[in-house]
Every structure is written in C-alpha cells, then in structure tokens.
Image (tube, rainbow, N blue to C red):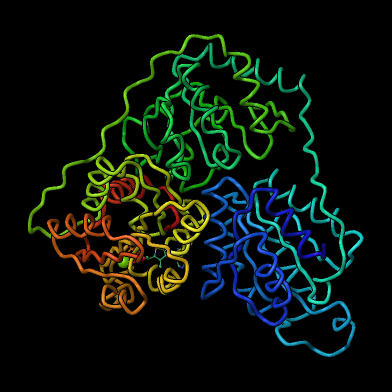
Length: 547
Ligand code: TPW
Ligand code: MG
C-alpha cells in the first residue's frame, strides 16, 4: 500500500463511510487514489464550507468518523468555520488537506495557495483540532495516522492531516490502531459509589443527557440506566433528538427561560442533577446558567467527572455508564413519567403559515410515516424544531453557524441512506442552498423546507430598528428544477400539508418546499425565549448572545 491507501483503510476501519471533498492541484494525487482504490466512496460538493458541514453531519449521524478532503490554502482555509463548529460541538471530523510536495517545499519560492508561511495552515487548524500531523515521513506515517485517528475518536473532536502531494504514492505499512487505555477500575468504582450515594439521598434527582452520549454510541445504555434508576430524563438543547428511539422516560428539552416551564423548574429545582455528556454553554442553558446549582450537580464531560468540589480526572463516559449499569443492573425498573405531548393536527385552511405550523405538519407526517431524520440550520427554524416530536436531529445548537442544514442533509443521506428533512431559513439557504445541485449526481432526495420570511428575522428581534435585516424575495422554489429537483412555494397551511405529502411520495429528486412566512411571525419557542429575555433585561441581567 501507499500512504494514501493506508490512510483510507484506517479511516474505514475507524468507522468512516465516505469522503466529502473539493479537489485542487495539491490534492489531485490523493483524490485519484481515493477514486481508483474505491476503499471509501467519494462525494464532491461545490464549496468547502459545505464539505465540512457534510462531513460533520456524517460523523454525527453514524457515530463514526466524518472525512473532509480539500486542497491546500484556498480550499482548506475555507473550512476553518465548519471545523471550528465540529470542534465546539464535539464531532470527530478528519480534515485531510493536500500540500506542496516535500521537495518543492524546499525551494525558496512562494508557492501558489500559500497564505503566509508554508506551515500557516497547519497552525491555523491546530487551534480548532485536537490533533494534527503532516505525513512527510513514510516510515512514521502508520504510527502518526493511528495516533490522530485515536485522538479523534477518544476526544470526539476534529483532527487535521496534511498530505504533501509527492508523499501520496510512497510505500507505507498498514496502520495498526491504538488500543484505548482503560480507566482505573478502582477510580470508576469510587466514582460510581459517590454518584449513587448522592442520587439516593436526593429528593428530586434528574438526568440530563447531552451530545457526548450520542458521540460515544451510548444512547441505549443510558436509556436503560435511566429506566433502572427511575430518573426523569431531559436532554440539553444540543442533545435534542437523543434517546428519541428508546423507551427512556424522556420529558423533553431543557432550555432555561426559553423552555417549557415545568422542565425548567424540574432541572433548576433538582438537588442531584446528573449531567451526562452535556456541554455547558449559554444556548444549551438558555441564559439561566446561574439558576443551576453546580455544587449539587454531577457532571461527566471530556473524560472527567466532577461532583461539586471532587474531580475524577480519567473516567470516560463509557466507563462511567458501564460502571453505573453494572452496579444497578439488578434494580427494579421504576415506571417513568409519561412522555410530553407535541402539537399535532395542523388545520388545513387558507391561513398563512407560521414556523410552529411547520413543526406541527412534520409531527402529523411522522405519525403516519414514522420517524424521519432532520437536519436544521441556525435561525428560527432551530427553535421551531424543538416543537417537533423527538427524532434524530442534527443542528448547530451551540456554535450556531448558519449554512449547516442543507450540506448536513447531504452528509446524512450519503452515509446512512436515510432520506432527511431539512429546516432552513432563507438567509441560511442563501449561504449553502446551491449545494442541492449535487443531489442529482448521487441520487440524493432530501426534503428541504425553506422558512422564507425575506428576513434575518432572528437578528431583527434583537434590533428591530435596523433595515439591513430586510432581505429581498429570492423565489427559491423556482430554482429547484434548474438544480435537478422539484420546488413549490407555499402560502397557506392547506398548501403546506399537501406539499409535504407530495414531497414524500416523489422519490429520486430533491424536493424544495418554500414556505412564505410573514415577517414578524416567529415560533412559539422563540417567542418564549424573547419573552424570557425581556424579563431578564428588566432584572438588569446581561442579554444572551444571538444564535
Ligand atoms: C455563518 C449570525 C444569526 S441568525 C441570523 C444571522 C445572520 C439570521 C438568520 O436568517 P435566516 O433565519 O436564515 O433567514 P431567520 O429565522 O432568522 O429569518 N453568519 C453565520 N452564522 C451566524 N449565526 C450569523 C452569521 C446570524
Ligand atoms: Mg429568514
């Protein structure tokens, strides 16, 4: 094998199911090996930000590695934002970049695509990846590849691999995977005892699950743990969609002031809040970070467990969950609380559509068709998504980058074969919507719902006086057929319902439903968020950041 083949085989063995990319001259040799070896399928898209988002979504959807491939400089540097998003939201994306050959790098000339120094790109990505390597030594390459892929898996964060173009065909030994180090069983046992002791003494224990539970494929085990412990379960905002396909006693999603008041009261009133894999961020915690008593919470994140002032530094989430399960497996399954009710039964009439109507229509659809994976962008559609029954949901819920939704759907369909629904605002669609033109080559047929309010509406909520939030009417439905899909513009609830049914029955081409939403009409969840903010503002609190 050559270096590129060794890398591809290792990626496949570590759970990658495809490579997303845009080539360039420094990356052409690598792309050639990808195509000709057939080790992993290659999906080329139009612009690198979409490549990064698709690879991120592939990692999230498959609980494996996502792979993004770019050329040096002009290509890879376009991916700083998606890789930063993957870093922030703990998605294990492997970014491979072509680079000037080892021999040409020795010339003193400036090379095209070189930003500053030859290693500037390496240093840029060092900031937003958890491990990096430049494969300029064929003897060391197997060991280096094993190390970075292991880092990506254990930290569940992106890594950067730079492959100089003249190294691609260098002969190379196969990659031997790194064996994960097991945490100290005595430490796990002590931690488990301390947690169970706290939960037993508590009067209102609550379990909150976050993204790490999915990243480390622990959903069914955590669901079982919750049932055995009889703990009510909520998800964090980022963790929305987790445990959706399990029988866990799931109450809903905690969103602080923006969320359902019963859930907010339950979480904030808990005297033993067990946070499994939850990123503590302002969006996850809907501006009420201060309302949670961290001295009484138990927090497992980033391979560490923190209970008040105690820290167990080396306990992976997997080891903790396994330890807890072992200890309580003979317990009695307590009946969980009933699941909450989500809006259903959209009235089929001539009224204009609001964002919450779209959530309701999707609930109606899933009641007939079963759960459908959903990819969401930043904007009010993200808040509306919280009104949809729990189902597999991929969203930039914390880092909140626009442009994620459409490429994420491509990543889901390419690597899982499932047909997703996309929820995206008109502003975000302007960023990456064109990528739908790539569906025809691969037979992807996502259903894309554009929330077209001709506006950066979320921003308007925070600064109503600014005219720059007015966008013009782009008539997105009309571009669908030119891109190889079908489009309809929808003005009423009746039309929305029939457009969704028609889209479900048409297979093989992407379906674009452009829903016209009057400016100023936002989802119920966003309304609550804004109302909560106003209350906060009158109490003199600092406003939260805008998504
Ligand atoms: C890559 C900042 C957050 S929300 C928003 C902007 C510009 C407006 C979104 O408009 P859209 O949705 O998509 O029409 P809606 O419901 O508000 O009308 N650049 C990036 N990411 C973010 N988050 C911003 C800017 C922003
Ligand atoms: Mg908009």
